[in-house]
Structures are given as C-alpha cells and as structure tokens.
Length: 473
Ligand code: NDP
Image (tube, rainbow, N blue to C red):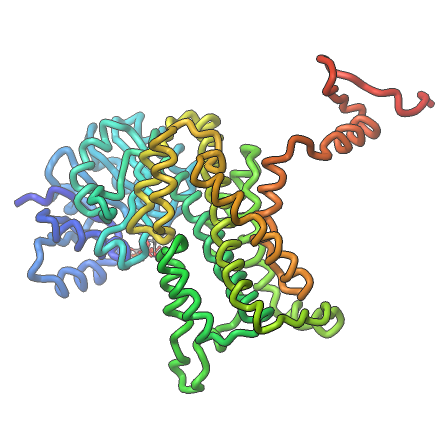
C-alpha cells in the first residue's frame, strides 16, 4: 500500500497524530529532519502501518497522489525551512497542512505563495496537547475549501467526538482563518486558566481554606455549569502531594512564576490591531507577566503593604463560595463574548466567512477549553448565526443578570482584602461598559478637541464640530 498521507515532524505532536491517523486504517509515511527520531518511532511501532523515510525526497515519492502531507514542526523558521525543501518536490493539487501553532499572518503569506504553484496550503490549529493528538484533538483548518474537502475524511476520523458524536473539526475559512481561530482559542484558554487561579486565590487567601478543601470545591463545581477540562484538572492538581517527599501539596512547592509561549499575547495584539476589546484575555497575559517579576515582587512586599484582612464569619462562608462560583461563570462568559466579538471583527477585516454555529461545537471536545457550556454557545449561534454578542442570547443574558451581583461582591471582597483579581474585575467592567447607554467618552473627545483640535460630534445634531477653547495667540 502506498501511504495515503504523510506526517513530517516526529516530536510528540507529529508522532501522536501519525499514530492516531494509522489507528483509523491508513498507511502513514513518516519523516523527521533528524533521522534517529523517525527510526525510534518506526522501531517502537514496528507492528503498525508506518512507512519511515530518511530523506524528504523519499518521503514525498512514497506518497499516493494527490499528496496529503501534515507538518508538525516547530512553528516559524522550522515551518519555512520544511516548506522550502518540499516545494520543488510537490505537484499541483497536492495538499500541505501546517498543524503547528503558527501565527495566522504567516499562514496567510504561505497560503498565497504556495497558491502560485498550485499547491493547496491548509493552516490548521490543533488543540488537545499530546494526549489529544493521539486520542482525538480539536482541529481548526483554514485554507482552500477544495483542499479541505480532500483531507476532510481523515480529519473527521482523527478528531475528538462531541457527546452527540459530531467530529470536532470543521472548515473554518480561507487562508489564515484556522490559525486565527486557534489563536483566539488559546487566548480564551489563558483567560479560563487565570479565572480559576484567581478563584483559588480568593478561596485560599480570603477564606483561608486549605488546598484539600479547595480541591473538593472544584470537584463540586465540575458537576455543574462550570464542568470543564480545566476545572477537572485543577481539582486533580490540588489533590496531588509533592513527589520530592516534603509532604506538602505539589502546588505549594511550585514557584509562582507563569511562563508562556506567546499565543495569548498574539491574541491580545491582534485585538488591539483590529480595535476590539479583549480585556480579560489581555489581563490574563499581564497576570503571567507580573507573576514572572517574582524578585521585584518580593522586594516590593517589604515596602508596600495591603489592608488588614476582613474577618469572615463562619456562617457566611458557604454563601461566599457559591458567589465565587457564580463570579467565575459570569467572567468566563464575558471572556468568550469578547473572543467571539473579536473573531467577528477579524472576519470582516481579513475577509473570512466565519460561521460560529460551526466553530463553537468543535470546541466541545478534544481541546483544552472543552467545557459543558460550549454546548450553550453552540445553541446560541445555531439559533442565531448572526448574533451580535453572546450576552444578547437569552441563556447568557439570564446568567449575566442573575450572577452580576455575585461578581460585584467577590471583586469588592478581594479588593478590600488586597487580593488581586485582574480578570474577574475586567469581567464586571466589560459588562458595565458594554451595557452602558452613556460612557464618559464625551470627556475624552472634549480633551482631544481642546489640546489637539481633533473635533467632536454632538448628540443632538449631525456634523463635525470644533469648540473655541481659547483665543488664538
Ligand atoms: P516542537 O515544537 O518541539 O518541534 C520539534 C519538531 O520540529 C521536531 O520534529 C524538529 O525536528 C522539527 N524542526 C524544528 N526546526 C526544524 C527545521 N528548521 N527544519 C525541520 N524540522 C524542524 O514539537 P511539538 O511536537 O511540541 O509541536 C509541533 C508543532 O505543534 C509546533 O508548531 C507546536 O507549536 C504545535 N503544537 C504543540 C502542542 C503541544 O502540546 N506540544 C499543541 C498544539 C500544537 P528535529 O527532531 O530534527 O529537531
């Protein structure tokens, strides 16, 4: 059998995706720049229909035509290097898929360049980590629709399946649309993670609960509206003890400096670029940055102290824990509302036709942000694919109205205790700004007109005005 598909890059993601594809009955060609890795995979899985090649020429020659090639290499220079080697070996109509975490503008550029040679280039977001790659990831492919149709059967087989059996893959849109949607997914992931961290911090610092008690609370939350992969793994994390024998919870010995690989930042940067507020995700990125200033924070803590903690009567605790749950759910909704608004604006600016009734369902399983409430988002967009904002769907309107009091109380309580809540606070601020009939932007416009003659519009008549703020000198 000639391999029906090939995978380039035998690091964790490529290897696991190759095994996933093979497990669906395909013969898979495999190749890696460093041959020893290809050999290791082929040897370890000698019983499987994997066809190793040790030169890129042999790899390409081994494939059935039109060729279908999935690249899983280090995004950026790695992707360009592999494309450069491949290009002279490919024929018109071949389909090249980049499954790396690629910046969407790179995908737009590569798609246009390869299109000149008649090569179909698909930029595909892959979420689910290494286990997802093996068992079923969520896939976000963008590129030529005809090219997608050629690979759709394979992608549908390897993708995660939602509860209703639907595969977590859909055609997202032209050129960089798939990688864009993956970028926003990752931004949302930053927000979700930080919201859980802030909620944990309030439970720990304000209510003084133990790590074990918080684990139980999260397990409980995972039974209801908040049911999601990230709540589930955080509950599990909180039950784990240090593996180096200190007998402490592992979270108590993990240094509080968060790293990042930049995809959250890209999401914020593009929100700034296209002019859409994405305050929750951006604050989540900043929260990682400020955490990384650990030595500076340690220094500052000797000089700058906070308020005296507020005494919380035992009798109030249960109600406060429920309010934290509500505040978390409320804030998660604000974050997704912003993420979808951003994608809507991006679709306009980059000329994509994004169908959220098809995009929301592919996040229901396989990916890191998988959660029960994605079913609610799916239903909202199925009812109204042109929904202006998630908050205007009756289900989300209702939750926002019911839970806003909780988030106001929790943010206030945290502020009074000197416990930071950058993302929870952003959530209520977004809600109050988005629903405001009047914002103080009149003051901004007056200031701009005053110092820079930038002009202003009036709320009682048409036209552009400039006020004479001072006599010409
Ligand atoms: P890495 O991102 O660590 O990339 C390593 C692979 O890239 C190796 O196969 C390496 O080959 C190859 N490579 C790097 N530079 C070059 C080059 N110049 N020419 C040829 N090959 C090169 O591997 P991962 O498996 O973690 O990720 C693969 C892709 O998937 C990345 O784009 C990543 O962002 C993305 N991704 C990763 C996820 C994860 O959870 N890890 C989740 C979703 C997406 P060699 O062995 O020769 O060095």
